[in-house]
Amino acid sequence: MDNIILVAEGDPDDRALILRAIGDADVGADAITVCDGEDVLDYLYARGAYAGRDVGVQPRLVLLDLALPRIGGLEVLHRLRQDERTRLLRVVAFSSSDQPRDVDQAYRAGANSYIHKPTDPARFAEVVRLTVRFWLTLNEPPPEGGMGRRGRGETFRGLWFRPPLIDRRKVRRTAVLVGVIALFLAYQPRTRK
Image (cartoon, rainbow, N blue to C red; front, side, top):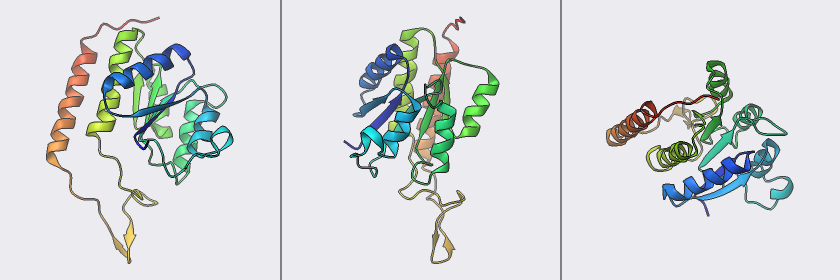
């Protein structure tokens, strides 16, 4: 079980919807669910109820609700990015807020992506399916060991190692998928509470 998605969602209805959408995404991933920020950190660092877990096997994707109880999503992001073991985890932040200040805070805290939760359950499920497909099938994860302490590359015998050149086909596929997602979201009616 090394193709794991960690779902951190406090609302049980949203959590069930996300789990169904992950199953419908057909990416061959197992979902682990936690209900609050403390459990996110316990799972990732193999503490508390997860003390027996192999900390070397980390999720390929974290779907993180920013309005988590006990420890909020922004604080969880800060802690993940400060720890060498989790700083390169791919984290998608979900929030019911579409305020620019909240989006900015999430990115500054270290989110790889910010998604405003649609109020329509069918649309929310589709957004989760597309998000999971993008991050697990098109997006290339960082290489084992990451990009070094300063994000510029690992040193090897005093020389800088640069990551391999970008595969243009993957860039094109990613651009097409992002365009399709943008079109899908642009033509959906927005409802406000």
